[in-house]
Image (tube, rainbow, N blue to C red; front, side, top):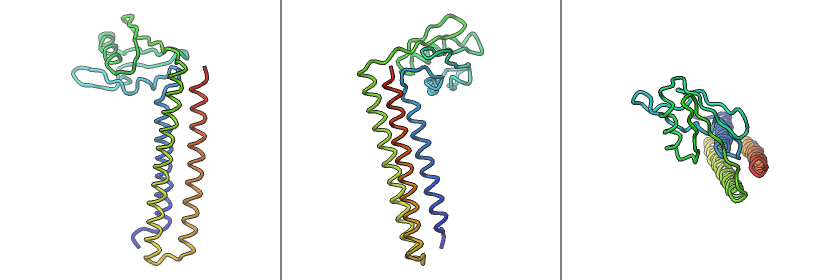
Length: 187
């Protein structure tokens, strides 16, 4: 046998972990009205002719819940950073004082909060679908191993372990959805 049952189960566990980490990352990109340096993660700044991530040319911090501060390491690139933030389509209006850039995060409207909750639920549902697909693929591998000589009891035990892990991950994703929804709807 090329792959053992423990290899199949280990691969399934790793895939579920990747799925969970992806969900956490996607949820962190959905802003809930609180300022976070991570909001500018995708901003690329033109630096000596090459696009580089903002975090490689400036210190990005959040001094309070409504403000993001960007302090460039070189004064002459303040305007480039400001332009990059505006062009990033994040909807921010940066204030440039010549030394640093301050971004004030506007409060979310009720309508926007509801849209964000829908996005969170959609993303959570997508993650659960991916997890279920991993289960399907893993169960197919178990069936193939069974044809190659794995006993029926071992196959049933493995399928039960897979289902138990899947149930735990779906419960975790549901909890993450509820927490993110609460974070978004808190004014």
